[in-house]
Length: 257
Picture: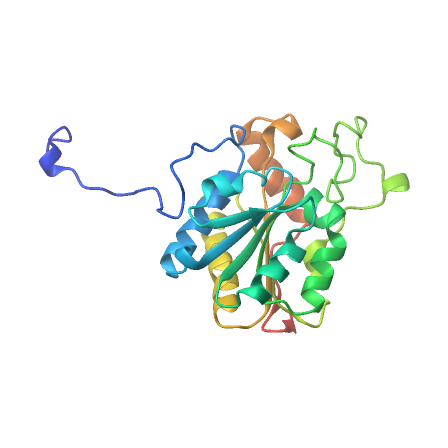
């Protein structure tokens, strides 16, 4: 039997993607942003577009993504990533341009930007990370916070009578005529992470092939913001988030599913 301590018999089974820099991730323990970053980085390498990709990182947990992606990147004001991506893609149409946005960013502060970028059919890729809370800025209630979910600004739980129900972004985006591809996936376990990788890859392939606007919504965990352990936060996604935010393809090639 080979000696595992013998360097001559060792083989590499996994390496960090060259799509990521060597900067240590600064996400909280148990946060799934790191997993999603890895999937994007691997995709850019596999599609051989890393060197011509440009990431747009707005305010929120995504704000330091430009430190982690090993490609050009620009920071945008909170919610304005789709507008910035539009300008870059129109000025440099040969580049692969993507935004990396949280739910407080995309579904609240930047709602107008994301809706109108899709309505214009901008040929960009949007990665929308939905963890149902304002994670970085203090754990406040977000547009995607679930009814009865406790946050720093809803300590007794979100009340439907006064704040309504969580916004269903993918369902809304699928109604936009010029949107090409909309899918909701999750990063709470390995089988779903595999599906998330496929969705992200398709969204980038659509842009490369000039098919127009694509958005992948990823249900993600925020153990610190939710006041849960990393294990329990993954259970929260599976048992509480997914029933309200059903996974699946909501639009593909311009056809609502």
